[in-house]
Length: 461
Image (cartoon, rainbow, N blue to C red):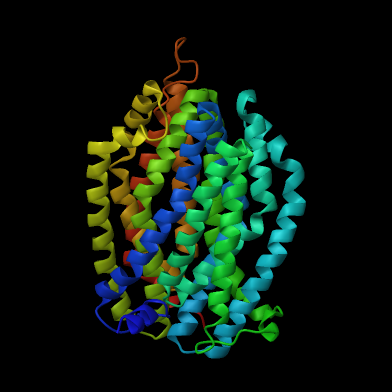
């Protein structure tokens, strides 16, 4: 019986049958654990760097984050498109289309990896200089980013292959492989930084190696799923119709990430003007924020797969029912997390640094963001439904509005209006206030567009 239960966890899940909230929750829990494990990558990086090297090195890792996210935009787009196509073709029981989708995405990813390395390598350091990165952390940032760029295949393939597994309803396998990679990452972090003393570059190398391992495990798992699709050289050859559909569905998600990363880079320039300690405080906030966001992202991805499979099967009433139940679960979870951050946040900040002033600053800034996680729960859940149904453009436009038209102007506006001789760059809180404003307004806009229902007409033909 135990063996059968494990096999059922380790196999694709049909989300077109059963009670909606149970299917969504069963899919979300393994993915939530996996997302927490993935966030642990960055958290361990920060803890090891902060404890063994110092606050400036912690700032270097944090300043590299927005640029690294920008480098991953291509793969996020391919992953989103692949996940939607896989879930809809799986729901429609279309074996041939499923086979070509998976094979073509693997090939497109390889091409993107090679192109990205060749194009971006010469520009890493100039970009950091253009962003006013403090001289004291410039070398560390450049080293971290260059190693991540060279190892981009591991980072990119894990995102895409695990997205395919989730599209098939298998969130458990991706969890297992990610947990293995997380343990490897932690061990290598300590070894490269504390023992070999490679500095910030050692942290990047540990992450790249761990991601390579997790991507290889995902590929092996997919190759064994012959009951659901065919896996071979024939399907690796690019076919125009499938590549175009991946691009059509994935490009808006990739652009959404690019818009978000661009806004972060623009705001990072403002953040850098406040000095190394404020940069380090933002790194601490981002690490805690990453864990707080995990349930929202997990429910959003679960609802994408749920919507994709049910739209593929033509069960739109079931999609609507699942959207209500999934969003409610996400909101309740985020409310609990918000309370925990307000109660225990200061202790969490102390895990990353022994500098009390930095702990206090980080906690005070984090309190501004706390309530916003409830708003993000609504945005991620309803956006997940729209993406799964094939409407990836609407979430992109909402992201464009909230980041470009709201977050960046609010951040720089508050900074400008609060400047004084003592505060030449204005109030530091402008960064967190602008983010909170974009989250709340984004939730309202997303709910309006979901209610309009145009996403119901966007299924793959």
